[in-house]
Image (cartoon, rainbow, N blue to C red; front, side):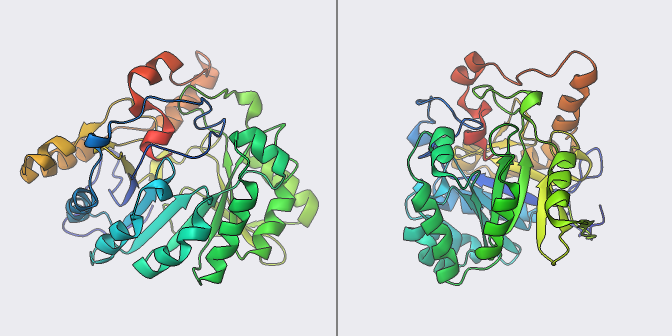
Length: 349
């Protein structure tokens, strides 16, 4: 990875800079996707522990001192957090933050896309795993398919560009829809990104037999479209991008079969101020407590020492288990109930 360092850049033990921060604004969600949070009820983070928008903004300001210039707002479902445009306006005032993005399931986009645009949001990614209403209901346990499509359409109506659609490719479930999803992406001016099914968390029913790999995705699309060429670019983004013969681009995030730990510059801040250095990390650093005690020197010290000592290569370590002890569930459901931070919906996926 080629980056232009600044005097304040922070590097971990593998020379990876701290550049991208995923900020979860809530652990609540209005879907129950089977690969993320398939149970009907969870142990939710206590509301009094959730960071205010002003606290999130201040933490982002401190992270920016160490080189963070990209922020992605996540959840749970971030649009469930009341008055989210207020936070975007605060972040927009920070000159160091060059990119503010949002990942959403799209259900509330038809109501909020305009206010998000007016607040200064740069980019939106919508999670959409199927174009079949019956499969959508089976996957999410909710009958909200039409609202998602309406939300995506509204993004275009209000003039937001750079739309992406994230699809978790699951063997035997939606692997027959890849071409249909690419064509839908073309129709709504969105770049589709296929994500290999990951084994984060423990409430889902993940198994290697359900992983539709990058190689299989590419072969499926080659059979439909012909030759596919990689897009050469200097980027630390998780997706490898490809181009179809007609110029259409799409991405694949091969976290399971081809981890990108070597170039990972992202970390995660939960809605209650716990900082995780890796999606697979079991323990985080508490930034809320010193922040609320007006002890910003401790906040800075925890960020500095935490990243400088970072050794995380979680996806690579998980892959290594395939040839040693086996690759089962990452965390058992009993652990998740004891510590809600361990599930993906609490740390921004």
